[in-house]
Image 1 (cartoon, rainbow, N blue to C red):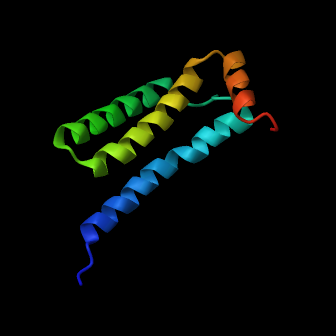
Image 2: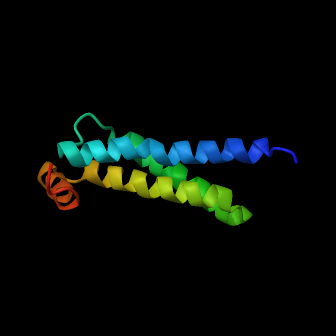
Length: 100
């Protein structure tokens, strides 16, 4: 039995990419603020993940589609929270985590 290092590395990369957005999204919700985050950077990040998802769809490669689509959702959430007026950002955060 051989170890499929290519898929192991790809799985680690996909999991790390998806997990990397969790701390930022949670920080926005917990602190009720997007201060210091770049709208332009997250716009480009959304574009990149949309392109990778589309690329995966065109190639029929689920290993590209699934993690990039999940990352796109996280990036769109963060982008949306940055784009909202501060009051609306706090309202959304309060709805998602009323205890903080």
